[in-house]
Amino acid sequence: MMIAKCEMSDDDRVQRAVELFMEGYGCCQSVFCAFADLYGLDGDMALRLSAGFGGGVGRMRMMCGACSALVLLAGLERGQTRGEDREGKAACYQLTRELLEAFRQQNGSIICAELLQMNGVKAETDTSKPAERNAEYYRVRPCARKVESAARVFAEYMAGRRASEGEGKA
Image (cartoon, rainbow, N blue to C red):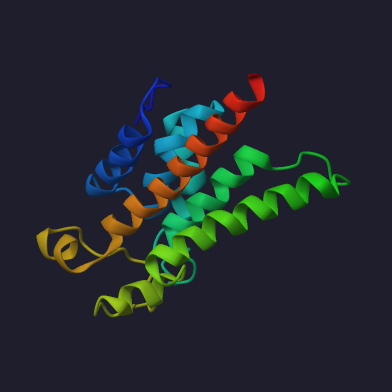
């Protein structure tokens, strides 16, 4: 899959995340790939980097994959590249916390199992085999809405960053 770097609107990126999920990609892959081109990542690399986070990390129902994408994006946005860079590490951690808290405020949790159970879906953890994607899967699971929510959280962050950068240039 190729995701070409292009000038997409924030709403287009949110919609793209949902489309990717509906095409069968995992929650993390869907959100991460909607923004990865902004950081110079090609689609195949973005898909591979984010693949293991599906199903709440390897289908263990831990942190929601859409939230894992927010963590990966925070790293691309503010991750430090020197071990001794404590300020850089703190900035990345702060952004990670802000993004995850925004998601939690909107959805009630950042944990896959809890998000599923809130919607009456059993959070199975006994197999690594992904559930079959069919009409019933999409009907009962909240995942597409969580993908949309996480993508919107990051899009809103980006819009705020662009606005503050614009103010700094005035």
